[in-house]
Image 1: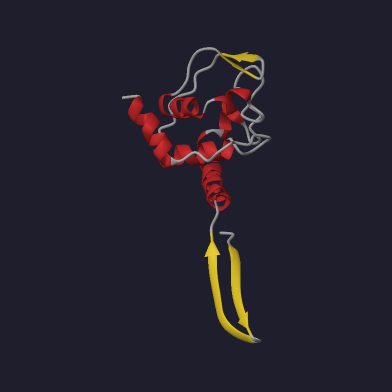
Image 2: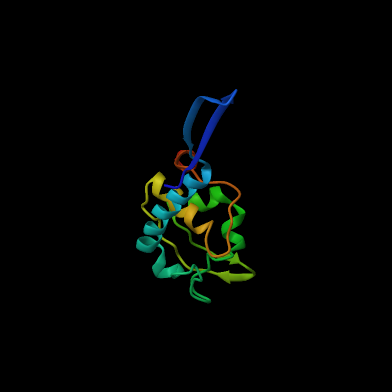
Length: 142
């Protein structure tokens, strides 16, 4: 984990009065950790159809790389991973009509894999997906 270290020195009349050291962890560290776990899940579950660089298979499986569909609606992405997806969709102006089965992943794995794909291959998410967000969407589907 990458942390930032800050040190505070208080000087008075040439004498060192105090030295404090602390570490802070920012959201980028949490995102990096989530993405690393998400890559492992992606490689096991998603790679066969969406390929190693998220490019998909032309006219068969849609790309995740630089994908307008992926980046438009996080809750829809969560739902698609929970329930699967069938029927026609349009991704980057091209139509796809295949079946994606339900992933079978738990809430944390779904959050991690979405953080990975939504922050890779030219994608940049506005905020991190959390397992709490996934749980909320899952609960709304019952």
